Amino acid sequence: MAKHPIWKNNYSAIVSTVICISLTIVQSVLFLTQSLAMTWRGTLIIIFALMFAYMCSGLRPLHTFVAGIIAAVLTCIVLGLTAKHVPPWVLFNVMILGNLVGLGLAILTVSTERVRFLQSRIIELDKKLYEILNKHLTTISQQDTLTLLGNRRSFKYQMEEMIQWTQQSQSSLAVLFIDVDFFKMFNDVYGHQQGDLALVRVAQTLKRHISEDDLAIRYGGEEFVIVLVNTNLQESKQIAENILQDIRDQKIVHEKSEISAYLTLSIGMTLYKNKQMAYDEILNVADNALYESKRLGRDRLTYLEI
Image (cartoon, rainbow, N blue to C red; front, top):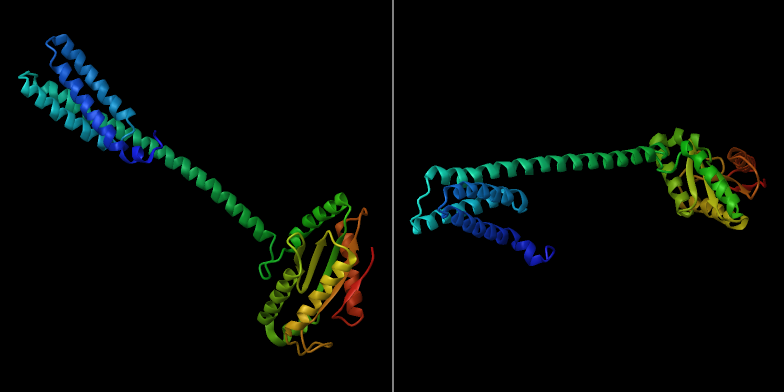
């Protein structure tokens, strides 16, 4: 019933009316009692009824106060119609003062509950903010600020996880070591700002050719590393060739390049299968393959077997 929309919308009006009528009846009956002892007991009953209305009705304190005052007025009307004489100070102490005390207690209770609620919300928000900031700082510490790829700091941990997964799944893992050809000359001619833009374009190219499960990082300077999981030699070679061709097709002008009028890449690659090797040993094979690509004239892929 409490979840019914009509009940929820009219709860305040209904309960206020019930309180008003109930208090009017209780107060009228008790004040009309002829026994003085019963009258004093009745005042206590009225006070308890008022406190109950304020503390347990679930209404806003002001709504309960209005209902209590209306009940007091109606009680006075009933007493007037029945010619029952009750000392004014009794009426004031019981009904008016009782309502004021009830209002004060209700406001104090609500205020305390609100303070506790706000404190709990602040603590909860503080925890969430801490988690968000901690996650953000972790991401920043593991991300290259220029290219938004992973950085060298996080590479060892990620690479070791991939090696472990490869061993468990009996699959293969390809490592591509990538270098931008004659990049120092590019920076000298076009400036560091254009050099940064070129690195960003290279990073974007790498991301286009790998899946979400693969890893691409900026290893340092103009060097990048890609790790392809659950792949084979043919697939990984094709991805490397596609990256080389993509950069060629972009035709990023490089007048000082000794092999082309445009920016090019050199790639060294190796394929890791289920062997007991450290990540740096695998990376070293790919690095040697990269140097072989440079020795053979750059703008090419060289594969070395582990």
